[in-house]
Length: 364
Ligand SMILES: *Cc1c(COP(=O)(O)O)cnc(C)c1O
Image (tube, rainbow, N blue to C red; front, side, top):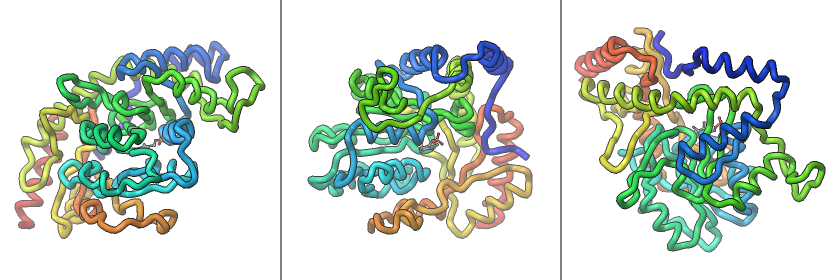
């Protein structure tokens, strides 16, 4: 079976973990600090704060920006549930805005219409590794004095051209969040990171991550245990050395697949963005999607449907249903993610393309 994702862990990670185990220093310490410094440098942000997951990274961002009951946060209904759940965690109200069907990301033209006096922030997700339209989102945020919280959990190393300069996602809004879950473009098993250019935000997140303490046993406010361990950080430091290579291979694989495939809609790429292909998501007519998925599975190729339903269709979000999420709902019926990870060989890619092309030819 060709899997949909596969973490790439080598001798370097093994050695780094052993070193931590033998040191006996397991909880948040020097390795975490080193990982934070190196990650901040990689992203081009001044500060980085490691957390226990991408979800807790996002949760801390909403807390630090004082978003809570009575506030509204504009986000996408076409995402992993975590990007919306964090809005509920703090008691705020998620306002879902439809996507651009080409990019699968928030449609900025619809954001402005969703803004009310209660709106506090915009939470764009850089879905599948493709940056959201940050130039327009930042413009709107400035105009209406809103915070921008980037969910970059699927887009380590992705970039956007802002004016004349290329910026890594996560470094563009007020805060950016990453996940290091095993299926992501780099991993620490479980883990997350907040990046920001604002010192006060970084310091406060550090405090909230550790039970509201800056100084031991002085609890300044209600905090949490959202810490990363030294074991995770040691893996992260090694993964960070390899992420550029991983990204390069993902982009190469995407180029090859995009060239080989016909009869299906391939992922959108543009000159102003660096898509890092966390997923390679094609669009297939809804009548054929599940059949094609089964065909691939039968022939040993794993597939994924990200996402089978928009977030508002789940019971926990029934209260927050929005109308006019037509494009996101349509995407749920047409998307199919196929393997793109760096460990695929050229013959894997050719095999995948051949199955899809043959299926489309025989069914149209
Ligand atoms: C993975 C992911 C998260 C959450 O990350 P965890 O580390 O699994 O908590 C949040 N948002 C998006 C878009 C993700 O893909």
